[in-house]
Length: 208
Image (cartoon, rainbow, N blue to C red):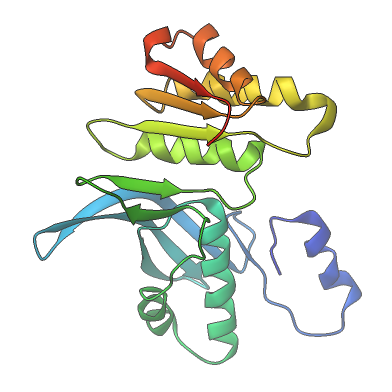
């Protein structure tokens, strides 16, 4: 059970089954700590990804998720680790197994682009929270130039303008250039401009 989700946590009270909970909070049975976005050199090539530790009953192992970012990936890893331990795998086996973990398309994956570029792909079902996290990750990744390409956020009703402007306010600290696509995304450009991003670094388009 995801201990960080209060609704999920209540299942433990309702079920007679043995439960094991995971999360980033101190009271979780299986928890992630020391979470950092980092890079390392392997065989002369730079790898970027998530680095954290999995803790369970005093045992601690490091976990590296290559080209993968975001809190959802940590929760997925903790869920997998918990299943592994229920099946009598030790934490070392779990850590080794997670080396082959790969995110699904559009869920905060770092994929190779053209001309030595890299793309942080967070396009699947984007919402204000996931966009904010994507920009925070982009801010922490080391790169000589960063470009944010952001489209409309759909399905947020009366909060459309405020949500888009709020995203725009985060861009200046995360990217050198901003490209917006769509009628709603123009408010992202407005938010970035009002936060001090130079007008010549903002590009707006009606469609893709």
